[in-house]
Figure 1 (tube, rainbow, N blue to C red):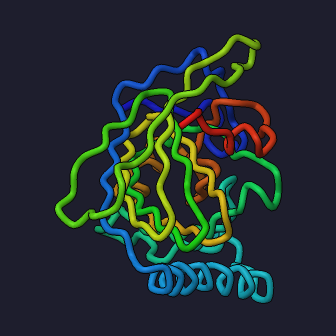
Figure 2: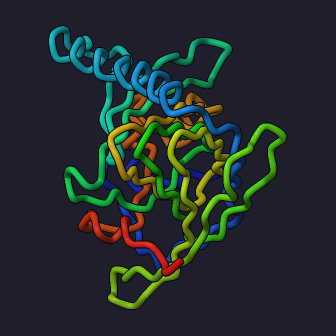
Length: 242
């Protein structure tokens, strides 16, 4: 496969949303909906791991040349829970989502230089809006007893002002929903509420880092954004008329 990045280590590289076309679609699988207290306990424990990792990084910065496991991304703080090693080129991250309402910023749509598998987990009073330029495929799961995932489209302005259709799916509160993201396919996550985490597996991170000629493992550098600037929170909180 050819390299996707123009500048391998650029952490804010973007291309016009009008120049990008998804070759595949993301797939979402609702897994389980939990009682509120159980969901809150799970999400809180995972989010606290990320926060503890960032506190430790602040107190004991990672030495130059070593993998920095506590990182920041547009949607939230991340922690590399499991790093790659010789003979095993995958790794795993936890993300503690930012709350769109509290900071009034909508994270940008983007794509990655390698495929991703994510499990989105929400607690009480919190949902995650998943968006893409291509309609996601929602697949059935034997364990899901919650409501059908709410899907809708809206229009967002492209960088030249002309509108672009955005496809959205809502992950409801107290839920686990899995998502398979092919390499180079657009996606956007925004959490509405304080209790949301992602457990993210990057099955080819070592390979994509070498392929893109990057100097290290950094999620921002492995990302290409489809907008130059973040937009106000309202642009990813609005919903269609139900």
